[in-house]
Image (cartoon, rainbow, N blue to C red; front, side, top):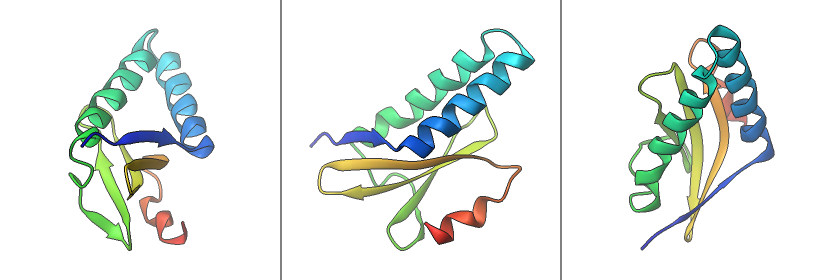
Amino acid sequence: MVYSIQITQEAYEDLEAARDYFNGQRPGLGSEFLDEFEAVLKPLEVHPKLYSTVRGDIRRGVLQRFPYIFVYTVEDKLITILRVIHTGGNTEYYSSI
C-alpha cells in the first residue's frame, strides 16, 4: 500500500524558512536541504511507521545531513507532516500539537 503525504501550511513555512536560511549561507544549499527532505519522505510512502512515536500518534523523522527533524501523523492512507524543526531549538514543543 502506498500512502499519500500532505504537508501542513506550518510545515511549508518551516521548510521555506530553512531553505531561505541555507541559501543565505551558500547559494543552492537551500535546494539541497529540500532535496534531502523529499528523499527522507519517500520511504514513508511505503513504510509510514518507519519512525517511532514521540507522543500519542505523533512520530518524529530525522534528516541526516541537516540538523532538522519533522513530526508527522499517520491516519488511514495519509501521512501528515505537521512541522519541520531545527534540532537546536525546542523540539519538545510538539507535546502541545
